[in-house]
Amino acid sequence: MAHVYYDRDADLNLLSGKTIAIFGYGSQGHAHAQNLKDSGANVIIGLHEGSKSKEKAEKDGFEVYTVAEATKRADVVMFLIPDHLQASTYKNDVLPNLKADAKLAFAHGFAIHFGQITPEANHDVFMVAPKGPGHMVRHMYKEGKGVPCLIAIYQDASGKAKDFSLAYASAIGGGRAGIIETSFREETETDLFGEQAVLCGGISQLMQDGFQTLVDAGYQPEMAYFECINEMKLIVDMIFEGGLSWMRYSISDTAKYGDMTAGPRVIGDESRKAMKQLLLEIQDGTFARDWILENQTGRPRMKKWAKAAQEAPCEAVGKELRKMMPWMEQKEVPKF
Picture 1 (cartoon, rainbow, N blue to C red):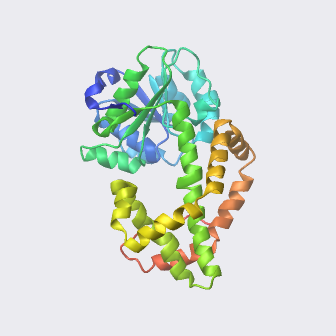
Picture 2: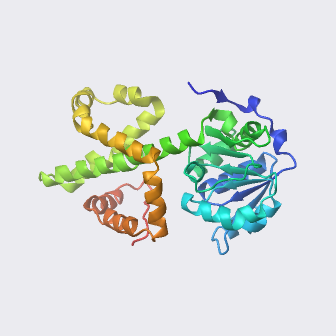
Picture 3: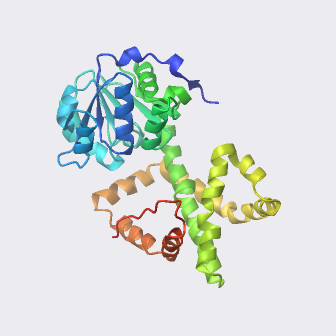
C-alpha cells in the first residue's frame, strides 16, 4: 500500500523566500497559484504572448510575465500548460533563462517520462498532481479542506526535492486530505491507461454502442439515451461516494442480477486483451509517439474524429433532453 503524508509531514518554511512561477492560468493554474498565495508563498504567473488568461490573472492580484521573464525571476517553475506545448516551452523560453539552482515542477509526468524534456542535472525535478479538477482544488482549500495529491521525484539535485514537493503539495491543500508518493513513470502510465481504457475511451464508447444497439433494435432514441447515457451519472455518483459495493447495495435486485450475469459478457476476454495491448503501447512509447506526431501535423485525425463525435445521433438526442432538465446548466462545445 502507498504511504500517505499529511500537513504534519510538510515544512512550509521551505517555500519562504522562494518565488514560484506558475506557467498557465487555466483550471489547475489558477488553483495552484491562488492556494499557494493564500498559504504565504510568493507567486508569479508566466503566460505566452497574447494569452487570454492575462487579464484574469492580473485581476486576481498576480504579476504576469512572459514565460521567459517569469523563469528569470523564479526559484521554482511549475508547468501547468498542455503536454504537447511543454517541450517547446522548455527549450525556447525556460532553459535559456533558468536559474542554476531552480526547481522544475510538473502536475503530469508525460513530458519528462517520454523524454520530451531532459532536465540538466543541477535541477530538482518533482511532480505535484492534485487528483481533482482545478475548481475543486480551489473550492476545497477555501473550505479549509483539500484534494488528495500525488508527489513524485524525478531528480533530486539538492537532496531536498521530496521535502519541497511535500511543502508545495501541502500549500495547495493536499496535506489536508492526503499526499501519496508515486513515480513519474507510474503516474504517467496509469493516467494514460485510465483515460484510454476506462474513463474516456472505454466508457464513452460503451455508452454510445449501448445507445445505438437499442436504436437499431427499434427503440425510441430518447429511451436509449436515458438508459445508456443519462443515467451513467447516477451510477458513477454512487461509486464515487462508496465504491462499487455501495453502488451494488443501492441499486435494485434486478439490476444487481443483471450486473452479475451480463457484465463479464460485455467486458470479457477480448476487452481485457485490448486493455493489455493499450497498456503495452503506453509503456513502450507508441502512444506518446503517435500523439506527438498528431500535434506536429496539425491534428488531422483528431479534428475529423471530434467533428464526427459532435454529429453522432446520441448527441442531438441528449441536447434536446437536457432542455427538459431545468436544474442543470446546459453546456455546449464550439462547432467544428
